[in-house]
Image 1 (cartoon, rainbow, N blue to C red):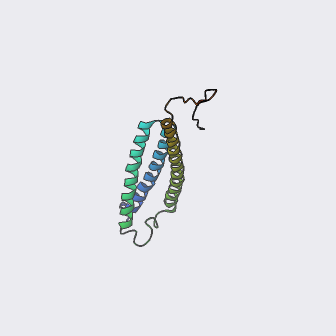
Image 2 (tube, rainbow, N blue to C red):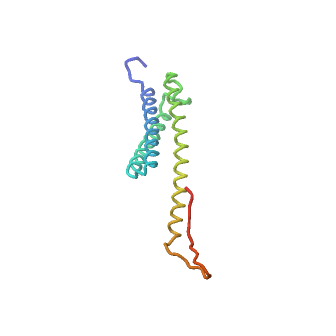
Image 3 (tube, one colour):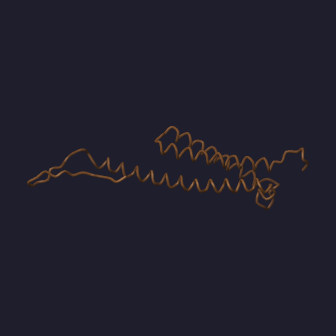
Length: 142
């Protein structure tokens, strides 16, 4: 390949790096939306995550099927600094994804507990036979 020709593998690697960083930003945005109870922002972020994930999947197929990759990994012939940036962005995204999964799991569990609490309590007080009135209540710890 001459210096004047575009280098598809390097361009695709640059796009891959951009998509990884963009997905990380969308996950951060989603976590912020969850923490501030901003449902429209969360919905937009989830849609953005879906779009970015779809494009990353397409790019992975393109790289795997490219004649440049052969039997080696697609990024074997990249400049070391670009390959290192991609590995770092992927590792950061993996850690962020774990935090996001824990946040979603914890939020789902909290919502289930609150739904159970509100569904079980009907706003009525029960009087127990005996000399004094006993109130039946629910409580939860947050």
